[in-house]
Length: 457
Image (cartoon, rainbow, N blue to C red; front, top):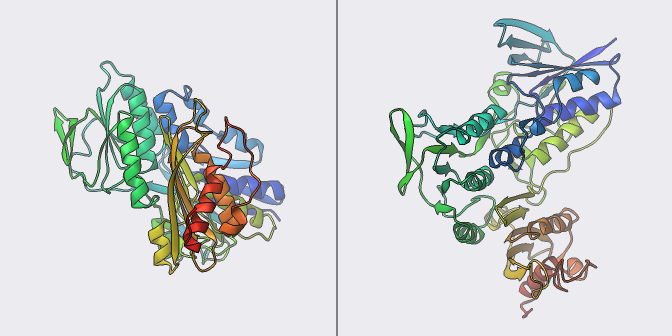
């Protein structure tokens, strides 16, 4: 008898689960139905800032897979359909067809909760003025892009929020010729992802690129005239005829809470290591789900496409009959602002200390290539180790082109629980166009070793 898998949410986590379940179970064995309340399924939200800048010229490039492509796999995707309730006892969902205005129910054998995240609603007076936008779903990107292409086009842009999206949108507005200001509530940029010293250093580097940065200012009011935005009150009055609110996102858990699913300490849906929720037959994946920090063991809620896709894969494969566990996360992330790159992995010093880890820290400046190489640029690296075990536990990088991807080597070292002594003699490649004879990754291990041993490097 054919069973039915219902997917609630049609983006990374949900559709990864759907495709992986289909690979292991045929349409005769498992019917798969996905409901997405928005207009798009399986799209690249991460590409939206680059569509705004023009680096990605075609909007269609952000569409990963269409409902028609999923249908050819035997996966039914229903756009503009919102799941309004989940009855876990009856194994039934209530659905509203938002375009037809009709309600119906559907039974399921297995369900994947993948509602994702939504923009954080910060109380800001004037947020409904024309010219004020969030950047979350593709409709947001289309609206901002249309405004940038308007005649007359905006001249002054302000980005409220100093996180990853805020930095990437600031780059896009700057590339489109707008005088651009980032207004951040923390002392530094990427607060919470970087240690304060690195966040402050990032502010200095971004300002040198020609993008203004106002830090330690919480925006409470937007100025307007004739119903359109004209400025942002953030420490000073920042002129702006285009404002992008990039104040972060929060997990969508209202539906899960109403269904009686357990909510974790992070405020996201709790799952076990197989992506199973507290309700029988219900899995969850993506930005709405709690994950475990692989270093500290702390519960986290991180909104990264890499994590969502991996969780969805695990959920889908287990629904298909596998027995696989999700191993936790390091929160490895990377971004850029023009030719300045930023990356990080593992806990910050503050989070590590809060978890009871006695942290050793090494912060140093290096170069992306051999110092004499003409294209070589500056980079700053911060590395963390556990004094008791001597294991590397975290790293952060701010620097010029080619610097940031070195974070992947650090992530591999942390993932595999390497000590600084293991890392210091790893046989990495060398040639002047790529690094100095001591790559910054190896320098990080040497510096940490010196800190731990109380010697000079």
